[in-house]
Amino acid sequence: MNSAHDGIKKVLGYLNIYQRIQRYLKSNLFRYSVLFFIVISIASIVISSFAWSHPYRTTLFGFIYFAAIVFTIEYILRIIAAPANRPDMPAWKARLRYVFSFYGCVDFVAMLPFLLVYLYWNTEVAHLIVLPYVFIVFKLIRYSQSFRMIGQVLKEVKGELITAYTACGILICFSAILMYYIERNAQPEAFGNIGDGLWWSIVAFTTVGYGDLYPITALGRILSSAISLVGIAMIALPTGIVSSAFMDAMQKKRKEKDNNE
Image (tube, rainbow, N blue to C red):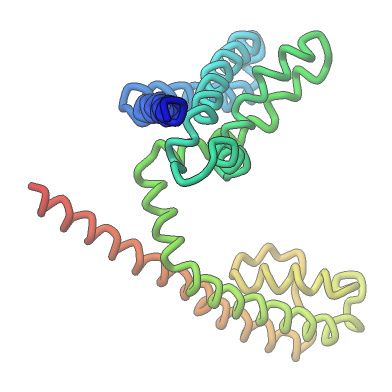
């Protein structure tokens, strides 16, 4: 009986530690500190692309490396505190779920410079470490309320967006195949396969109009005109869905704010 009681107390003690770490990770001090290092890292990556920054590359890389140390500490703390988010799961399973989640993968990429520079400091690999580090931009999603709202809105209208983009995909494939068979004899170098037709169809459907591929036959031009007109309407469809859902979310947020006041 005493051993079972001690075991329960031990488990509760662990949960208390996990919850404390989780509260610290959610605190404003920690959030703004990590956000500062995210901004510094992104700014360092952007500045390092300019020619005039070459004399300062070592300093800029140092900023990125130091930020990666902070992100490594954050990653370890989140792994330790993962059971606090999933109290219904075993600790190992909650941690594994975090590691393979979207944010877990982003946090792992953010700490790569710290690990790889330590292993490959005197090799050419060290200069390529920053390349995957651009994914650190996605860390802003966790710390930005606006990004979280956009993600929530997209999640709410996921079904409608899938339907809209499925319809777009069907029309793009149909017009690409049709345009290929219309134009392949008139300009075989431009429409050599259906892949070229898909490229034209996407460009025409989104009304970008790069001008690298365009029909020269009368039937092809009629089809291209129709696709361009339909494309305007089809592209506006998912835009309207997202805009409407976003406005609803903003109104709900205002109502909640007014009720709290």
